[in-house]
Length: 517
Image 1: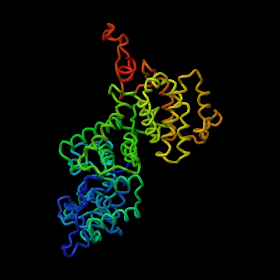
Image 2: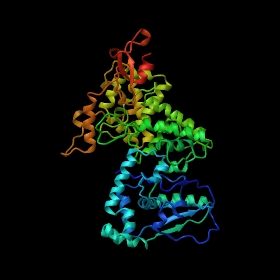
Image 3: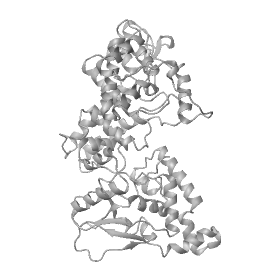
Image 4: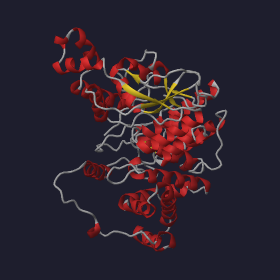
């Protein structure tokens, strides 16, 4: 189920400050009134700048939590730490505070607070899930405005709202405080979060390396340069460059929006933008493009933003190459290169294709690929399962993408011979590198034992049928994607060709501007 983005409700702040040791007695509880956006308490609440985004809860969990609170159920204490600047940093409980604040301020990722946070640019996916969440909460619990109305006009709201509204004045959320400096607070944050809701290894690495250029670049791309600015310490000109390049990369990777089951071949390169796997995918993507170590070895913190800009520019260059209207674009169709035959986005395929294209460029073999592209794509469609076999050998995207890339490279080399595809693949799987691969026969294909089509089967049926009549490039005969189309003169302008309908054809940008010439 889609997750609700509540990241805007509690701002982030730099954590590298000292504890306020002359505070006096700290609050032990907070009330629902303290969660209003203009309250003294909530206006000073902050998340550490390394905190992951507050988008781990779906609409049901948010609704259940709000309901638990108003019914007086026991809620775990919120853990805070106070800095010398007076900010109250949430060490544990940001989702709980954000969920209740969303209810109180009527902002489930689409309200006034979120609009200001994202400069008025909120994706359709975020707007849709926010509206669904509000509808569910209002139906199940009631809106916060209804609860306020119950105190003066009880006859205007549901009886159960009146009942629970009377309890709100007495309900409180328990607070606990971390004592010590910023180092102690940061250590407490990671320790607590690993115990309560473990952070996956990639996300943890991203949080701990938040000042490194690859991490900053990944954060900027995933949010299209909006939201919390991990690059805010850089100059205004540098910040602007980061945001503009990140926005362009985001649009190329994630437009058009992916909907499942798949009912169109117009699908994005990067899969779903709002997915728990998208941020790790983008970080890995950035690392592969820039030949950076997955564990950040040898990568220094970026103090000026120049390193981040260089990483973003190199990433954009490859994104242009994969699928865009840039003259260098190969127009690799996502449904063939980045998805399984069932319509599931494959991170391993995306990274493998990036490595594959970079190798072709390095060895100046792009035109060799163009020459055999039609047969190459036929292989990807027919022997789609080989990619999964490679992944299963390593059980890791980072460990398996190189072998997938190597398979692609061998295909390009061998398809230039007169061998059949069947013989080529038999030669490849007989080699030392790929002896673990097996070619399936028709009898070995998996068959369904159920009568209802699930989402994957619906997608597979559509893709299989749609590919039979899909538009192809008139030069290389590879599939054409809507994001990467060029109109080519059949008879070149240099040879007197006119801009007439009969002298035009649809091609990939590179086939038109690079390969043809």
